[in-house]
Image (cartoon, rainbow, N blue to C red; front, side, top):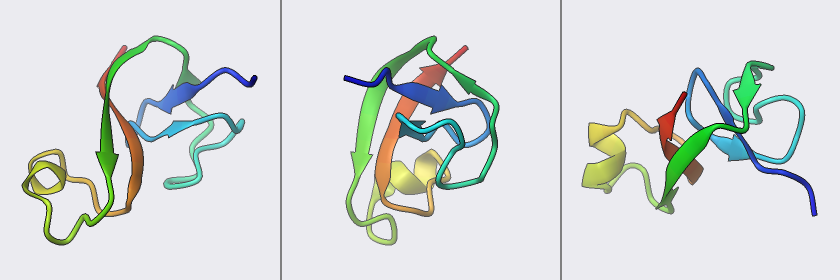
Length: 62
């Protein structure tokens, strides 16, 4: 199983070497908490966290 990494820019969680959301390669294995966004346009959590795309996001990235 591939290790999940979180993007330091947009907090998207991925197993790839480049973030699929913002195309950044600044990824870290040091993150905590998960938010799954299914409908970012109607989600209060996605508005609070400034998430515009559906996907898996970390709550805290260091």
